[in-house]
Amino acid sequence: MTANLDAAPSSLPAAAFLLPVAAGIAVLAFGRLGHRFCKGVALATAGVLAGMGILMVRRTLQGEILAAWGNELRVDALSALMVLVIGSIGFLTTLYSFRYLEKGELGKRMGVVKAERRLAFFYFLLLWFLGTMAWAAVTNNIIMLWVAVEATTLTSGLLVAFFWDRRALEAGYKYLMLLTIGITFALFGCVVVYASAAANAGLGGHEALLISEVQGVAGAIPPRTALLAVALLVIGFGTKAGLAPFHPWLPDAHAEAPTPVSVLLSGVMIKVALYALARTVSIFFPEIPQLTVFAVALGSFTMVLGVVLAMVQDDLKRLLAYSSVSQMGYVLAGVGLGTYLGYYGGFFHLLNHAIFKALLFMSVGAVVYATGVRKVSELGGLAGRMPITGICFLVGALAIAGFPPFNGFMSKLTVYLALAGSGLWWAVVIAVFTSILTMVALIRPAFRVFWAAPPPDAEHLVHVREVPMVVWAPMAVLALACLVLGVAPHMAYGLLNRAAQVLAAAGG
Image (cartoon, rainbow, N blue to C red; front, top):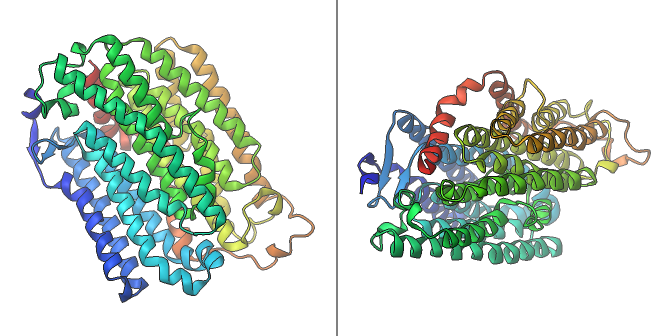
C-alpha cells in the first residue's frame, strides 16, 4: 500500500516505550541498591525519553515518518508531539518527586522509613506508566492502541492507590472499575473498525489493523457501521479522557493519588486518551459530517460542566481535577471540527494544558508539602512565606484562564477562530463564557490561599516556608514555558502545523 512508501525504518518508535519498561524492571529488581539508584534510573530514563521526543520532532519536521516492526509502530508529527509531551512532563515530574515523596505526602501518610522502602515500587510503576503512554503514541495498530491505553489504566491505577490506605484504595477501586468498563467500549469500537475495513475495503487481515491503512479506505465502511464504531470509541476513549458525562472517576483519582501521579494523570494521560480518540474517529469525518456538531456540542458541555463543578470545590486538588475536565472540552471542540485550524488549535491547547496543569498540580503539591493542608478554607497568607510557589500558581491560573501574555490565551484564541470559521458562533460564546468562569474558579482560590489573611486558628501555617529547590525548580521551568509560548507561539508552529496536517490530510 502507498501508506508505507514515505516511512523510514527507525529504532526510535520501539525504543520510546521499551526503554521505560526495561528501566522499570531494573528498578524493581535492583531496588535494594537504594533510593538513589531508583531515582537516578528513573530520571535518566525520563530524560532519554524526552530526548527521543526531540529527535522525533526534528525528523518529522523534515517530512519523515518513522516506522518499525513492519509499520506496526509509526511516528508522524502528531505522534512526535505526544512523545515529547510524555517525556518532558515525565522528566520534570520525576525530578519533582525526589524530595516531595519522602518528605511530603508519602512520608507524612506512611512514615519516612516505610516511604523509602516503597520508592522502588513507585518508580517502577512510574516508568511503566510513561512507557505505556509512549506505546499508545507510537503504535499504528488499532487493537494495540486499545491495549496500550488500557495498560496505562492498570499502571496508573496502582499509582492512584499507592498510599494503600482506605481513601486511596477506594479511589483506586473506583478508578479501575469505571475506566475498565468505559474503555471496553473502545475495544468494541476498534474491533468494529477492523472488521469493517477487512470486510468492506478489501484490506488484508493485517492491513486492516493498521490505522494508516484504514484511514485511506474509511469511505468504503457502511455509514451505519461507522456511526456505531464512532459511538463506541467516543464512550471508551472519552471516558479515559475525562469527557463529560464520563468523568466521575477523575476527581477522586486526582485527589487521592500522590501529587506527582496527579501531574501525570492530568498533564499527560488524559491527553493520550484524547489522542487515541482523535486518531481513530478523525478518519470518519469526511463520511459523517454530523460528527462535527456532535463533537463540538460534547466539548461545549464538557467545558461548562467541568468549570461549574470546579467553582464549588474547597479541596485544591479536586478543583484542579474538575478544571481538567473543562479544559479537555476545548481540545475536543477544536479537534472535533475536523478542519486544519481546529486540529491546530486543539493540539496547541493540548500542549499548553499539559504545561500549565502540570504547573498547577505541582504548585498545589508544594502547598501540601509545606502545610499539610489542601483546603482553601484552611489556608491564607502564604505569598510572604512561599513567594515562588505563589507566583507559579498565579501564572498557572492566569494561563488556564486564557489571560495574555500566557500560552492559554493563544491556544484558546485559535480554538475560538476555528469555531467561528466553521460558523459555530454559539460554541464560541460558550467557550468564552467558560474562560470567564475559569478565571473566577482559579484566581479566587489563588488570592485566598496566597494573599488573603489566614484563618484565625491557622496555627499550622506559623512555621511554613518555601519548598526546597528540587521541588520548585520544575515549577519555575513550567511557569517560564507558559510565558514563552504565550509571547512567542511561533516557536511551536512548525510542530503543531505538521501535527494538524496529519489528521487534516487523513480526513481529506
